[in-house]
Image (tube, rainbow, N blue to C red; front, side, top):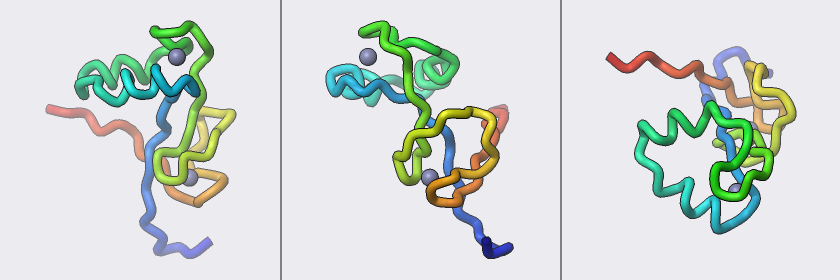
Amino acid sequence: MPENQTNTSVIEKICHESECAEKIATLSSDEHNLFKTFTYCPYCAEELSLVCQACKEELNNNEYKFCPWCGAKFQEDAPNK
Ligand SMILES: [Zn+2]
Ligand SMILES: [Zn+2]
C-alpha cells in the first residue's frame, strides 16, 4: 500500500431496506451522529450493516482502521467544538 495514500473514509451504518435508507438519508447531522451508535434500525428493527462510505462495501468489524476493500483510512470522529 502506498505510504502517501490519503484516501479517507468513515464507517457508515446502513439498513438494507431502501425505505429506511431514504429516511436515514434525511437525518440531520445530530441525528446521524446518534444513528451511528445504533445497532438495530429504528425503522424496521433489522440489524444495521456497517459499510465503508467511500466504496459502500460491507464491513464486519467496526474497529477496522482501514477499509479492506478500497484501502481508505477510517477517520475517528473529530470532536466538534
Ligand atoms: Zn431498516
Ligand atoms: Zn472502502
